Length: 105
Length: 162
Length: 120
Image (cartoon, rainbow over all chains, first blue to last red; front, top):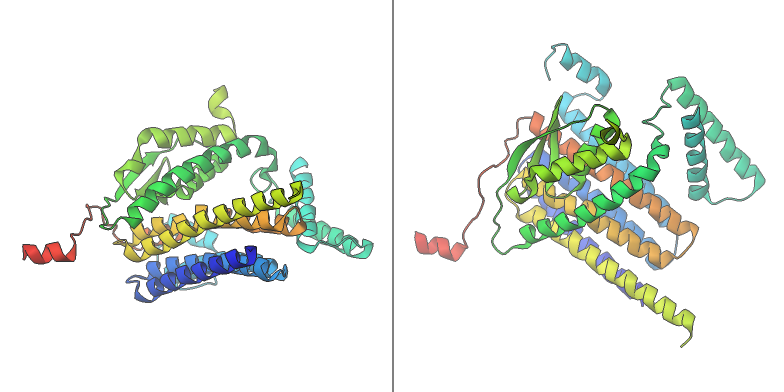
């Protein structure tokens, strides 16, 4: 019985991911898209968890754990890139430069 | 020193939960990786109250249980706002005063505001947070003051003593 | 029906209830992200999904996994989502604010398309 419940849950999650994907494509600003991508990643993690319990293989949970970490780091990296147009300099240096009067670009 | 021990114990537990091994060779490899991580952390001088906040758990757990109730309540409110046939929202940007000097307390307060649906911390200033709220119902000053006091008590207990 | 069977039934029902509530929150959050008017309001709808919906689904799966190492891993995933999702939301909001994105601060209450036709 639980297999069917999990299957329905996985299908619902796929539907929510499709809605999120449409926001990712139509989103007027960059930040809409980043937000949609982040939320899409969270749903992917949940889908992986549900799927791995549905088929009874615990490997999926490890992948979901990794995916959650990478999703977070990717969001931060995208935001950092679009703010500073560079990934080379450490964030701490960036805020220091702004504090002593350099410009934000 | 005590923070370092706490960090080592937590690292060992996480290693064991993620691998699930029970053979001596593999366990010793795990112990070696914990030792290397600890050496790196000591060399980076990052072992202090903020990187190992495990000794605050007795006060943090009641705080997060209370926060869970708040999250559930405001979640239902956001759900209603998002599912109304005709959307009717009045977003607000308010400045919330913060009375805390420790970084951990400020961090947990800002995190709690963001964690509660309907309010998101947009900007962190010297003595205040800029908070965006979905409807005016979420911006009660009493609610923020109570959350601030609870976050303070959960991290430092300063509010109670002084 | 033995006591163990009744226990399993109760566990399954609790798991289904948690899963159904979590799915309602996730789907409502996704719909809200599509429907709400501007970026800062959409952010709140995405938050619904990432906090309560995700946690409820993870707890439902923990009930299904039982008292095993798998449940501990699921708990770790839930803890990670609980820590990272508000940080990511704040990062996006702060970046949008710094970039000069102006939030909509007036009342947003569009009329039904048919009513609008009546006005015109």
